[in-house]
View 1 (cartoon, helix red, strand yellow):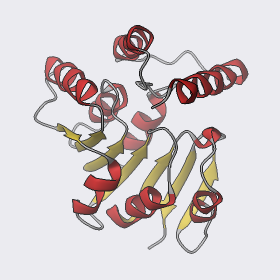
View 2: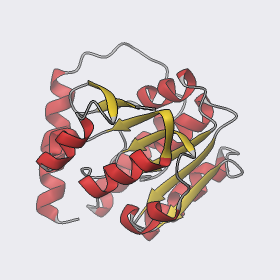
View 3: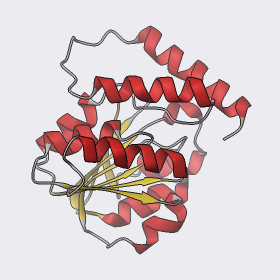
Length: 202
């Protein structure tokens, strides 16, 4: 990820934070989120933790997720939050940066979740096609910005009635992504601003 792209994302994240007025919600993994921020500042890399892990965690709990796929691990913040909220779930999380994979695996092992959270090293484009169709209850996209190819793969992976959280829409995905997420034949969709909450039509 280029320095210019990182700078644009930083501006977007700051803009989001400026207009949010969140409740004071307990966050069991706030230290992992903060570690991600420190790592990004130190290494000038693309490790961003989702703004509030309580959203994917609450959705994981609400749908009773047993199998979750995530794109964009960073240091494991939201993977841990979802695994904690859905204690019977297995989480497969995709990360392209080898150092982030190493750090995330260490964080996850340190929380005793290594038996339920798998960090897969590679790109979403290369790894998602190898995962089973209709096999997941919840998909969470928290990479830089979703592409039509990735959104299509996440739709394939979800069971009918499965839920997609597609984040970082403020960062300018292609019009094809918007058309896909807004297609009533594919999804029942609600916009949360930077994130879309989508339920796969059966």
